[in-house]
Image (spheres, rainbow, N blue to C red):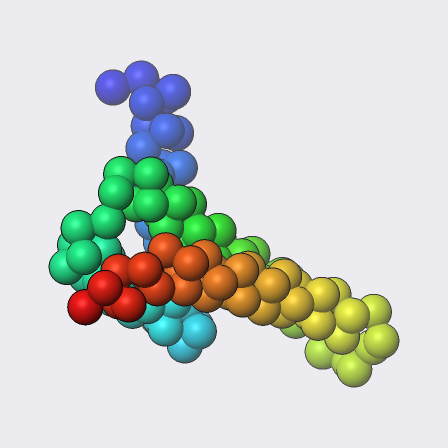
Length: 121
């Protein structure tokens, strides 16, 4: 195996370690994954369309990615300063706001997709 392949494999290894770290240390991310699992079960139960599945997957990826960006930003801010600085608070608050917006959007999308199925029961 040449160095290029080793570095590519290392990149995947580090990425998986990052996902694992975030899952173990971030309660909200665990909640996001649990909700994604429930949405998957609902989609399977209601036999949603391919397009609806794609939309839900994209939404789930957006929320989980936002949560991971938020986590990494919080870790970075904590590394830079332990002092209570206005700028550090702003960085953390804006990142948390990103997660909140993506989560609210995902809830709205979920309602729009699943409501017709639920109402037909």
